[in-house]
Image (cartoon, rainbow, N blue to C red; front, side, top):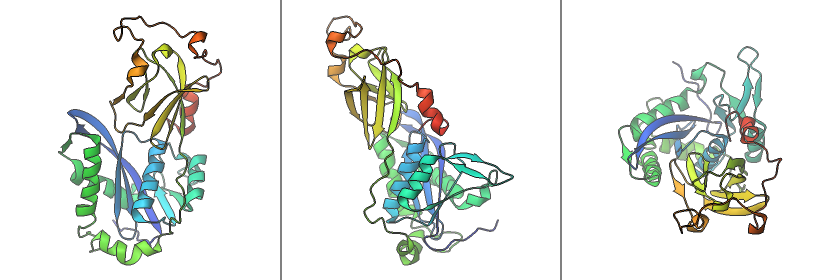
Length: 304
């Protein structure tokens, strides 16, 4: 298959691939974001617990920082979180409005692969397979942080240094010689705001679930609907407009962030039974018009 070559700084291809990896003794689905610069084949790899819109945006921004600049064009697959519609016959493409805003913010063009034609984005799809086979296949990790450190070291010491089969050069040499200066400078551009606005019901364990992880809230809110704001590595829980909990966002899945103060009234913690919230507790009743979770997640076809 003939590979379409691009000019230095012209194009970056992105994709996700998923592989089950043992982390802390638990088989965990790891979603690998892989960005490949079209000219040099320089790679950037990040691991996520899901393939939702904020993971795509975070992966892109981390790639821009790692490469030290922004390409003219980003070539992507027809992921539901990014592309609302792509007609194979007419080639009409409808991008998600947040992707439009993200591209304007960073100043690049968006190009979506033709449906059912994987060869359009062959460099990156081969890059995903290369990462899955060579970086993590057969490996296990004690923690998510250990996985991230391994991917960073593997990319720097192996992927970037290998003699590429098509170009005949190490990606890092080709990148430093011709591509890095062709990228548009970041020039102090701030991160794009990727806040997620969710609604969750508090479980009997005094926690809400987000992306497979549990976060505690005050025990009096068991059974109540709360608003959850996820942004810039933090997670805020609000009830009736009042902030009731703040956590650092957990990476991976199956994690639990629990604060003792939130559990103080749970039966078994101090012997008192759980009771419903009352006005005198300072926690108001749930507003009747909180939007259901489906309304938020339907926007990106399966969740931000």
